Amino acid sequence: MIRTLVVEDDFRVSGIHAAYVGRVPGFEVVGRSGTVTEALEAVGSLEPDLMLLDVYLPDGSGLDVLRQLTGDAGGARPDAIMTTAARDVASVRAAMQLGAVGYLVKPFGSAALAERLTSYRELRHRVDALDPQAETDQADVDALFSAARPSALPAVPAKGHSAPTLALVREAVRSAQRDLSAAEVAEATGVSRATAQRYLSYLVREGLARLELRYGATGRPEHRYRATA
Picture 1 (tube, rainbow, N blue to C red):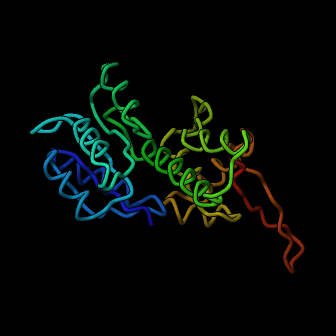
Picture 2: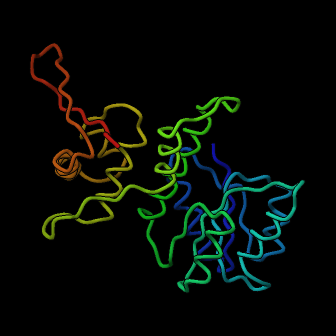
């Protein structure tokens, strides 16, 4: 599990973000902090792998958290995805320079955060699979950098589809690590089987999922879906 610390001064928003994280397979929220001081203490005591880090905090900036952790050579240095209303170029640039692995501008929904977390999880899996003593080639490097970026969702047709539902269905297929039926996707996402089938068909048309046929005893093939990216 990827241990995640939510750093957000608004207690209600912090709870929402924590709930979002809890829905993504492979992640667990180990703590919530509302200030720079609390965040630094939590990093030391909880040793999270990842922070969801707001910029605007009562006693400073989330960027200050990154600066202090980066300057502490002997301390823990979790990765950070900025989750903030700060849209100014200076904040974005500072976050990049300080090594943030993502930047989400508020307000955002669960689907947007799930995309960032899924990309981050894929990056960690790729890094863990590599031999730390071996040298990488350009293909390995390109794969790592592409894994750090969330892949774009396809353009959603104006009629009959919604972006949040599309993201939810796609994440269910991507995180399964196996082929799924429309009924299994419906159960995982809370939508009807017919809705799941419609969105799965759309993902197949967009090249983001592939259809596999499984033949059973009756001779009628069962439609199964597997992510392609």
